[in-house]
Length: 82
Image: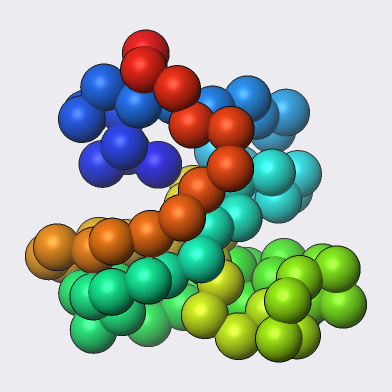
C-alpha cells in the first residue's frame, strides 16, 4: 500500500491500512519473489476471505501488509490516481 501511494495510486479502504477490512486484497501476477514472506496477521486475514477468492486465495496478498522488496506486477480492483 505504501509503495502504491508513493507511486500516486490509491483505493477505497475502511481500516486505513491496519489489515482488518481486507479491501486491499490483490492478485500477484509477476514478481512474487519480490514480496516478503507473509506475517501471521496477513495469513490469518487472507484465510478469513479465501473462500470468496478464485483458487482459494492462491496468489493473493493484502496490500497494506505485503512488504515489497523489488518489482511486482499485480491486479488490484478499485485503484485510481491519487
